[in-house]
Length: 250
Image 1 (cartoon, helix red, strand yellow):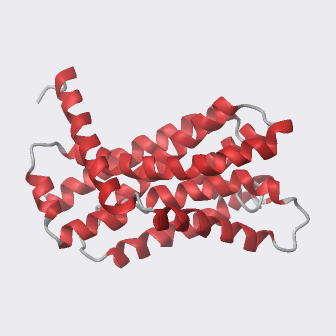
Image 2 (cartoon, rainbow, N blue to C red; image 1 turned 90 degrees about the horizontal axis):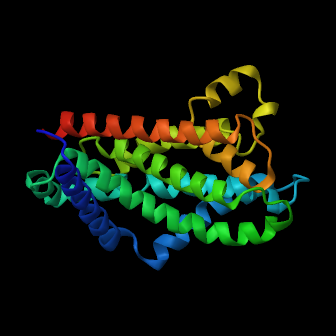
């Protein structure tokens, strides 16, 4: 089938319909938003207790972790529930491509996470105003981070199960270690060589680094490297998600 502009437009429309459905059914609720903010906040505050660093310095890391957890949690919840209720089977038989399904699931996570991150972004900008480097870099960094992490969650949602707990257990097995190897709590420069090497393969590393650059002007890799790597990770996760969805559902 040729990927004409009309075909691509149809795929994007289908993806948007899927994303809108997921948001309306599962996540546009006050309690979900509150939990999406509080979990990363409490994690960072717990780690900050006893440290001399001011709380304002935790803002970039807080937004990065919020993006990771909120964006990647959408699909591992919605897809297993829809498998259980058999609505996912109807989605597979609908006149939409697998590309639309994977992209739509990712867009829902991206929009949910983005809205939460920008709730934190506004007070962060106010607090950092004297030292703020670039609002444009921050906005672009948040957008790319949220989409990369949403695509990451879509990969795990491809696991063929109706049990949300199974998918979330697998996801947390990867997500939680990423927090400690990605320079969020411990600067990359302070890590041993093996830790810096492992950090290179974590998308959270680049999300945290670009946010620190936008807020403070400090960076390990450079802003353009961070942005490029977030795009690369998003593409890898999209391609992998399409492969796994086809493998397990067709």
